Image 1 (cartoon, rainbow, N blue to C red):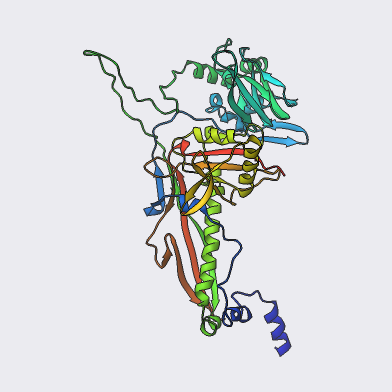
Image 2: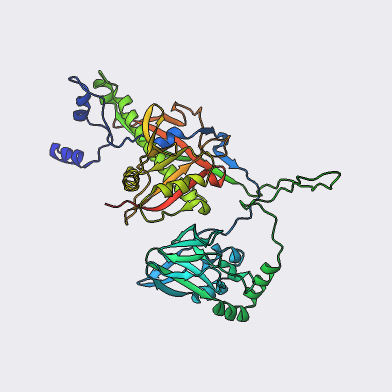
Amino acid sequence: MTTSETETETQTRPQLSLGTAAARQLASTTKSVPQMQGISPRWLLRILPWVETKGGAYRVNRRTSYAIGDGRLTFSATGADVRVIPQELTELPPLRELQDPEVLQELANRFGQEEYEAGQVLTEFGSRIDDVLLIAHGKISKIGIGRYGDGTDLGTAADGDYLGEQLFTDPPESIWEYTARTTTRCTVLRLTRQALEQLRDRSEVLREHLDELRSRPRPAQNKNGEAEIALSSGHAGEADLPGTYVDYDPAPREYELSVAQTILRVHTRVADLYNHPMDQTEQQLRLTIEALRERQEHEMVNNREFGLLHNADFKQCIYPRTGPPTPDDFDELLTRRRKPRALLAHPRAIAAFGRECSKAGVYPESALVEGRRVQAWRGVPILPCNKIPIAADNTTSVIVLRTGLEDEGVVGLRQTGLPDEIEPGLNARFMEINEKAVTSYLVSTYYSVAVLVPDALGVLENVELGG
């Protein structure tokens, strides 16, 4: 092989490690250590209490809960035609145990699509429940009647939510306990009582399922859907006391530690010749660790298996009243749980909240967190987290956390004491020096995050950021 051919081959090979020209930047003049734009405060990793997770898994034991089937529905769209996916109907509590695909398909076919403009009424307080409504797109406010006849806000329903599921199980005289009014343009799928009764008469499977459901005794449960603990109070004399026991979830969730890894390569020539005054391997490792920690926080927010945004209980997810995050929205987010420790929001969401506070003539206070002054609301610090995504429609989410084992909150999971550990839960292991004189190190970090009780984590969804 000629010299020119060798040079050409060398130029086309991918570079595996830091080149000498770049390494010399750390070997002369007065200089800074290598800087990195991608480093963020990583507040989530800093505020979470970390639980030692031996064996690589963490089991969260809870009391038995009957609150099943409270998920959200998924729809398919062909142009302007929207249909509910038949299997998704099992997210409705009365259909949770119905697994017959033909019946689910028949039910899905009987939902009719309707379009509504903002301000239209879908259901009227006191009228009979004659429909099941599936919200494919848009936002709906639920307004009840207060003690003195005035309206009271009962929350918001949006994409994937449903109304009127009582139609499957409750008697025909059941009534709507609120008025549902659209606050945006909405696409709704409606199943009428007549369509349901026609299918019920035709399908023996559906008829037997609904009859069995209506005759089934309702299990004793508290307001959180947990198995009730029978107690007695206020009695006198020798009253018979109830017997009880605390039932546990028979299939508790287990969180396995996830991993983020990379192979760091350092050429021996660089490590030998360009190691003064800064250790090249040390600087390469430092920046690699920063990148791994950034990825770790991203996964703890966004991972579909254990990330906070995908593991919030649906009952703990709310929507803003108007669009941008307002003080009222933050109040509702905080009052749904005890002892909130922190709010996490994208910096643009924090700016949007500030604008809404200015419009309302209120001024957020500040709080001191780890020696830093940050914005706060009701004494709860609002911490920036750029790992919370911004959707294509310029919306995002705000997370609220209660943390710690003692408070049944959110905890980080990791295992320490790893071989060649250089930070808690993170190690760098020497692999080899290959035939090109490149030294390789395997850098790994192991982590997860667990929600001990559903109300420890809340999310304000579909927050509009504005301009």
